[in-house]
Length: 484
Ligand SMILES: Cc1cc2nc3c(=O)[nH]c(=O)nc-3n(C[C@H](O)[C@H](O)[C@H](O)COP(=O)(O)O)c2cc1C
Image (cartoon, rainbow, N blue to C red; front, side, top):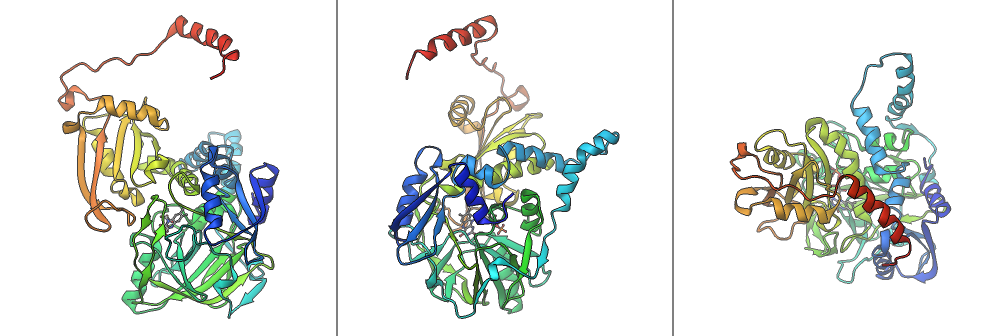
């Protein structure tokens, strides 16, 4: 796995997955525009390293996770399904049947040993310590024309619950107000916001540390929807196959990944709010300005020659789709521990995570699809799912055309649509109220007599047997000389 961000960038070079941009390109809108253009090219385009951001001598890395190949490289797997299989194995502990079985389990047991982070005293991220440092020294992007300013878009925000001491890490954007102050856009449902809520109840200042550009497995883990109270660094240790090395911050009582490129130390005061936004968001629209807590900087530490890692979100698909795809695959085996009837799930890029989720199930009893909808609406960040589509297990949920066809042919709108109300994503623009609105489930499974369906379900058309084999052979022959 990768020692640090530079090690990952070197691997991207070897795999010809990174493009160097040697022309001067401005962090003010130009890098955002280039990244958007590149992200929309087939397969997500290459990762980008802007070597000469106008006005800065710190290179900007962006879109590093923005393809299936690169997100797999980042997490050290050939495919995300391979990773899901490993997690499934670890989540299903077996008692070895004999010596051979026990030996086979050793690599997995070794990986469990790597889960706990360890603290080191000497850290690359503290090669330079600047108590009087300013955010103006870094090529922080203004991504879109109507953005309220410059935003740090891929930070790992570290906090501890002031009462329990439990750590949380989340990726929450930070709008730069001036060299020493930013917004802290942790939405109300997120771990950082909960720690802040506790701090406000106690009337205490909340220490915050922000790591920029650690190794890729750690960076991904901050975006993962880990259940509250479970440390994201356990997941990171598992993914990187080695403990995460942490170093104590200089001015706050927090630890950050030692291999980060840049660290911002500071605090958020109780009661303080400031207007944040607008921001060109991953919905493809500008999110409305709103009041959010304020981060005050106490110290900047960084490597001698740091790279500034960031991302640009906007009209999908962009880099965040691939980070989300990793979460979809990593969390599926864990969700199946409580909902084993789920066969597969898919968040289409155009659904920007919370708008559409498609789930296939091994349907076992009447009303089963509705049980799954209700379970989804009660499960961590899946609660935001505005449209839950449930299909039978023989439908390939990753094939969006097949899903559209099956939904259209399998649902009776009046009978098969279930509405409910509840919490919705903070970025939801269509609900009457912010963060509270309605959701819809579509039961697109085949209906049973026990569900009141008295008619015969039609048989799906397929070619089978010798004619299908012959068709393959003939197509093999004629397709070579034919160009679409
Ligand atoms: C690129 C990117 C930017 C994000 N920005 C925000 C943000 O500004 N605010 C927020 O609450 N969540 C944001 N998220 C989603 C959170 O990182 C995600 O919900 C994560 O699980 C939060 O961790 P937590 O549950 O520990 O709070 C972002 C995710 C990505 C991939």
